[in-house]
Image 1 (tube, rainbow, N blue to C red):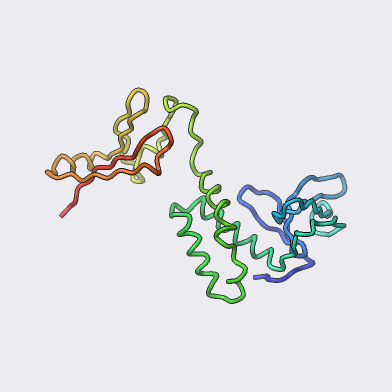
Image 2: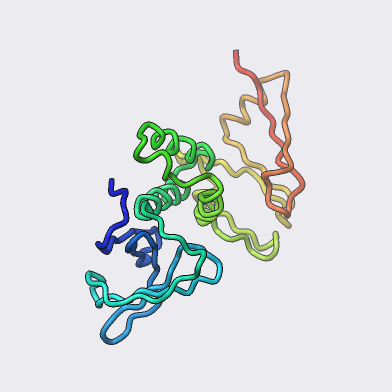
Length: 215
């Protein structure tokens, strides 16, 4: 791991293939490509910072830099910080576990080394970008509930069994169950129920669940 301010231009990969570099403890994103150079803008997050960096077209050589805002501090560990932040975003998009669980695991791994523990992104720094990355996994809902169209991935299990059993004409009621699950309900003389109001789309009041205990 490179944990120091460096005169070398270091590239940081991103999920959306954006061009991002780190130079002398500051992170920059590509603003525009000119005929003879590239212009990069400061991505430190400091309010009002319009600092710019100019490189050759290959972004391998530094040409000049502009003034940064007074509050835009140099971070000697910016490259490591950006690497870890991008890894958290990548995992949030592809790993189905809760976002906080993913963060805690990587933070715990980083804490095993004194060289990395202090420079790992804090939960406050990572939270919004991780949740935004997670939201991209799911398609945007249509404007009206009546226009909802579920995909095959949303209506079948991982073993390709049918999971979507019923929907009302206006989609105000959706029922998900497997054939085996319905058989278990039919065979049981005691049903348990659960419901939650927090994780359903705004169109719906609640997620109502029926289940049985197997002995």
